[in-house]
Image: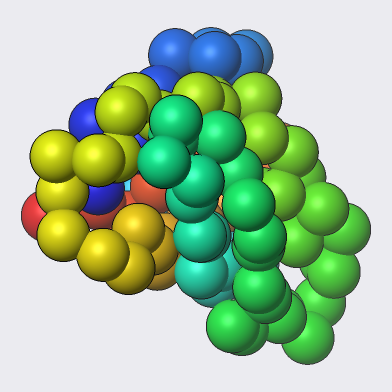
Length: 101
């Protein structure tokens, strides 16, 4: 998951932030991402949709798609899925929560 989070941020650094998480966040969408064997995105499921700033769900989905492919999955056990929490600030920039762990 850490590699995937870095790929999302690196794919569009203007849409992401890596510094401290603000005390108050704009939105926190959560996505479950299923990958194909080549690391391309097979399916994205919205696990949690924020009640405000609902457009951040689509921004998070776009970030996942821009970060793909995520590498050869055949070395890893199935299922090839991960869940990511997106922390959006007031400027609608995201930080994958994985980078905060």
